[in-house]
Image (cartoon, rainbow, N blue to C red; front, side, top):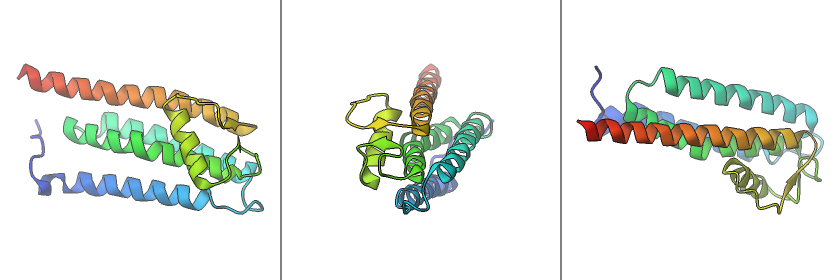
Length: 166
């Protein structure tokens, strides 16, 4: 059985992975939400959305099957599910473009990020409304939010239970 990491050196690879995820998701959001109207649209938006689905599925599989240490799994899930996924969904919304092509009322990259977090957490204020293909993307994000946040809470409870039994 593997021993849980306790020193900074033992956490180094996990921290590098987490920072890498954060940086990659930030640049994806930053770049795709600033596409020109000529570059953005249904084609690029659909391609980005399909890549997003594969990324979320592969990350979920990886955390559940390949990361064996619960503390590392919980940390990576927290960073990935709470920060990275909403940023990547915001990038996908941005890939569809502005001019109410995707989210009615979104006029800036920060609007896509705000809409993504509101949708991911299933708060749904109603001040921005998805349209076209982004309606399906918003539903997928809400369902993803339910599932991933549920997985994160389950992993947290499992870790807590495991340590309190010992």
